Structures are given as structure tokens and as C-alpha cells.
Length: 221
Image 1 (cartoon, rainbow, N blue to C red):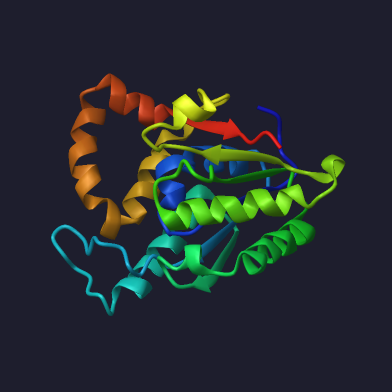
Image 2: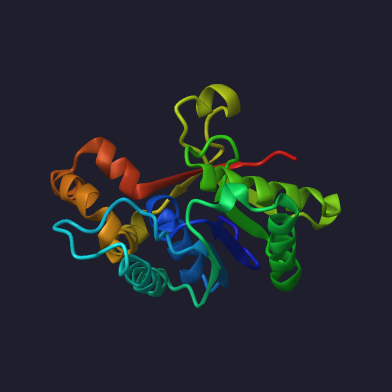
């Protein structure tokens, strides 16, 4: 892939980046590309408290903050923005406010690539609201000034509506960073890792494909 000028990642929750883009982020940082991660919340309403539980409702925000810092370090992110919104409320924020926030980031950073969720195809209301704000912000820019936007999509019917992913990145050289990013968010990922790690060890094809490739949809404005 071409070397980007600047990558801007915008997601609502800590660990959103680990599941779908941590290999890609690690690839960009290894190339010397600056990556800014704007994480809207601390995911303080997350259902998981560790396995076995080690967090409480009161301690979870601080734990998830530290997990996010660790994951950013693993991926080589030097510009992590924790924007302080409350978890599970992004869908209720005024749209103009969210669009303005994204535009401020774009104007500051001048990214050549933005990574976010595909609105309407990302399952969680906070995911969809975040992606929608990004798309509407980019739509306000002159066509010649618009960065490329790569979206994650995983709703049940997304391929029927938006087709197959058009960007498939081989992240095999960065698989260890992806695993480490997942482990960094252990309060949320312990259950998944317990299931996935034996499959990786045994070379399960589906599990290895998830570990070695990341897929994106280029948003067509």
C-alpha cells in the first residue's frame, strides 16, 4: 500500500481499534506515518469486567483508560486523543457538534486517510453515529480536499447492501501487534482470547484469516 501522509482513526470505544484495525495501524506507524487516534469515550458502560472479574463499575473507566494507553503503545500511536464523551451516548449528541469536532481534527491534522465505522453497518449505535459524523464532515469539504475514508462494516446484511470489501490488507507481519493490542484490552477481550488463542495455535483457517487480514470499504461520496 502507498505510504499515507497522516492517518486519523476515529472510533467511539477503547478496543474498537484492536479488533479491526490494529494490524493496519501498526503497519502505518512502522512506515513512519503519523497516526492520530481520536477515541470518543472510555467505554465505561462495557459489559465485561474481566475474566475472572477484576474491575467494578466504579473502577472500569480508569482501567479501560490504562488499557487504551497500553494498546496505543503496542501499535506505535504517539498521538492518542481521549475526547471524554460518555459511553453509549454518542447517538444522542447533537450532530452539528460531532461534525464540527471531526472537521476540527481534519483541519488540524490534514489526514490523507481516515479510518472509522461504516454508518448503518457497524451494529452498535455509537459506532454508527461516529461513522455518520465522519462522513458528513468529509462531505462538507471541497472534493479535491477530501481524504480517503476507509470504513469497517460487519452488520449481518452489509455485503448485500455495500458489497465486498474493496481494501484487503495483509497484516501478517503485524499479527503479533494485533494480538498484543487485543491483550492490552484484557477487561473486554479475555473471553474472546480464551476461545481464539487455541485456534491460532492450531492454525484454524478462519481464525488465522482474521488475524492476518483486515478489510475495509472505501466510502464513495
